[in-house]
Amino acid sequence: MRSVIDIRDLSTEEIDSLISVALDIIDNPDKYAEACKRKKLATLFFEPSTRTRLSFEAAMYELGGNVLSVTGAGTSSAAKGESVADTAKTVSCYADIIAMRHPKEGAALVAANNASIPVINAGDGGHNHPTQTLADLLTIHREKGRFSDLTVGFCGDLKFGRTVHSLINAITRYPGIKLVLISPEELKVPGYVKNDVIIRNNIPYEETNDLLSAIPKLDVLYMTRVQRERFFNEEDYLRLKDSYILEPSKLTNAKKDLCIMHPLPRVNEISVSVDDDPRACYFKQVLNGKYMRMALILKLLEEAEK
Ligand code: CP
Image (cartoon, rainbow, N blue to C red; front, side):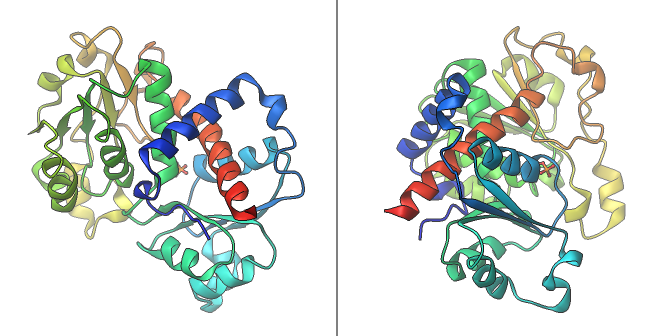
């Protein structure tokens, strides 16, 4: 049974095809309004979420399907000690496809190995969040008109940011990508991403802690939140949380067509006064996430029926 746990589960051709379907959904929503009639999506969210859960649910409703939902470990039998494996086997009896978020790295893979229906990883700890990457890619495609020949800056928590790791993996598959990795020393991109993805594929990159100097060369700036929930001690979080705050004054030397992204939620790393800047794309990312999740649900359900 085909599941999507990691962005690497999708080939570049499949990502391009999902983008094409999402663009067609945007142009022709009526064509898809009954595409998942009588199908059920189970959203199993054992960690907080606003965008991912609601966009999966909106996606399924817009495809004419239905939704079963678990929100919070405390409201399901996980609270009584039920394993992820047993939960996946159980939900397979009721639903046609699962979207699952869990605080533990690897939980979605365990679910996929035990479910008899497709599982989509909606975020597992600090590990992977492939559908956020699909949302990010559609946003870059719609804003820049291409994936190639872009200088992409990632800023903030590049250590724990699962969306950063997944997007680096996806965007560097396209030619002419340069990376600028902007973070404090303690929150640099982990070695396995740097060595296995960036260095192994000869992607030009620089690491810096200086956002202001980096901004003028960027086509895309991907800001991230310092993730309190992933820190082992509060002291380190408090010391690092305000490392980068994007304000209008910092954009004076930015390109006129810079695409400013953020997976959200934000805390204070992008000032709300940036929201009115036409280069702010983070709420467009939210909407694009729904279209890409529609395209992915369609693809996995079609494959499951074969
Ligand atoms: N971007 C994202 O995953 O948001 P939520 O945590 O609100 O789902």
